[in-house]
Image (cartoon, rainbow, N blue to C red; front, side, top):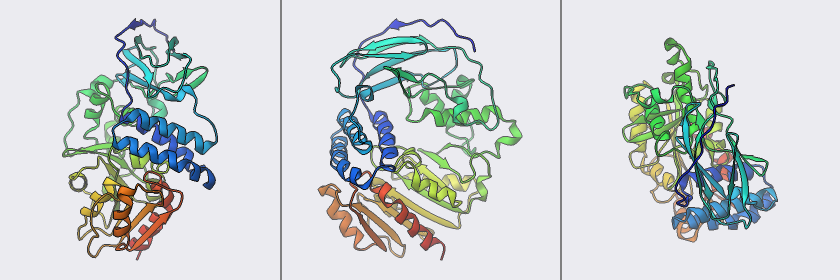
Length: 416
């Protein structure tokens, strides 16, 4: 391993503000804590989570992050600490070893009265409450062995931020040949379509999950060409929609062999990474892939289901079973996507939509659902094939609480 000299230059001090990416990171932490928490701790944290949801609808991401951090602390029985309120930006997110990057460190919200000491790439930063620190850093040059098949650890650098001796994920990845993939233009029919565009985004404005994208590129870059068609992609693009792909035998297995497909749609403000990584630490998706289902998790828009169908057609995927699921806004979209070939619809706190004719559908709602939504969900639930209310859930955690029942419903309907 070769260490390069790092040049640090102070940049502008414009305050770094929390946004959807910071919310997504905290949602994953919350989900991981929720699935391990006792019923008593869940009951205690529900009120705090509800307040965070209301903050999201008002666009106050800093307050959302604060609420999620406090709720996570309640679930694990601790108190929030100052370092958890820090937010990071490394641009570009996917970079080559030895490349100069810009580092920004700031606060999602104020929760500390003393400065913190951080270390990254062998350099030390001091950040005061309310301050944003920006630096340009020449990253360390490293030799990265290209292995087959590569997984996330093979493309992830060792540049976790250390804050007062505790490591925090910096949200960056390093990757050999990143620049080459940024300029690739793959045919839309390629299962890898969209990866090059995501690499470009990660090297520009940034994306929510750079590690998954870096992993996709590493797979493409590290295998002989005749092996690439045996790998399942992590992301694809169809029309205007980016799709996260979860295959039961990833990274191996030909996509056209999949006969059971599920399309899952996240709620407003989420991303294609929500169902695979959040919503009960990805348990609903894992249950599906463990049972042989191919799961497509697109960016949830009115065109998402059609774009997923178009992508399946291009890949030669002809499902014998098709299920559509969704949370909140995504639940409403799922209900509106009812069609003759859909075997079941699963919704969690659906925002909108109507009862589909002739298609079995499941509705879940938390007992602590927001008043502005609970009435309409309850009314829809009365028309559902199966309707369940969960005592220790509100708008977000209802997916985690309802996963077992929802999946049991899918199996009953599709295995007849």
